[in-house]
Image 1 (cartoon, rainbow, N blue to C red):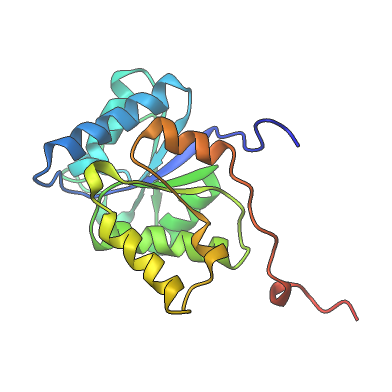
Image 2 (cartoon, rainbow, N blue to C red):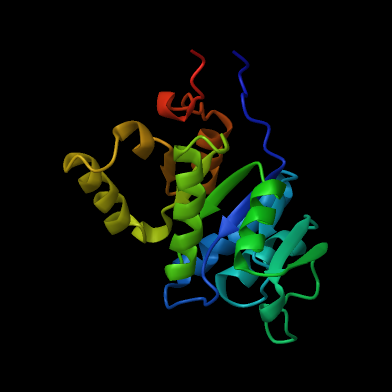
Length: 200
């Protein structure tokens, strides 16, 4: 096995379209952008200049990195779309946005966010659980933001409603350095037997 099983050239970041009230979270979001730029990893994100989305993008752009935004037509307004990106792709709808982000990315990270962030994160995680992709998926648990969600996922396992193997698809760290290391060394689980076509 190679020392570095996953070559990561691009990462989708899911995060809030507002900055919130926790300055540490906003600082961490900017530093994620810096990390991506300094490691020559392209940022794939929702294309907005607002909130933590804009903060991450700015961290990349300030350090001469590459940023591709993917935004649905109905959100592409002067007030929302980031106009200084390397590339801005417009899709017809939200589903098209998620598909395009999946296609462009070698991995996925959830930073702090609200309903939209969780919806994107859990959909891409479900796709992995179903064997539809084998890309690493991480949570950057900035300032303990996701402590309760992580505990809830462990509760799902304890209650027998989530397999531990599927929980292990979620890579978690409090630092971008640590999370990236886990993503690079991530080994996807085999496609579930029930997903394979009957060969008999």
